[in-house]
Length: 52
Image (cartoon, rainbow, N blue to C red; front, side, top):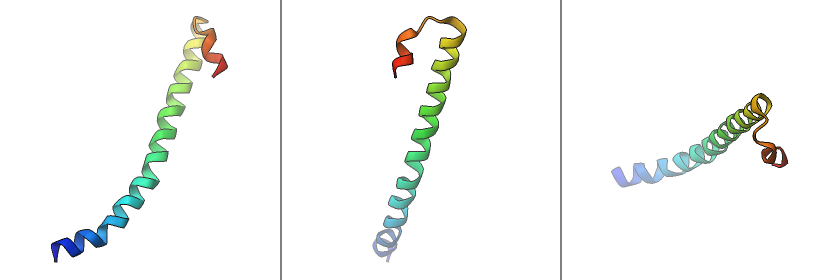
């Protein structure tokens, strides 16, 4: 019964991972981009990052 329950919950876990990972990725990328833009605006020391 335990193996059957795990097998039934496996697609739900996979689906939740598929839904959560892009959201986390986008949040991290947005925060990194905002950090780079703010750093670039305040210091002007990172001209290369404007190309990204």
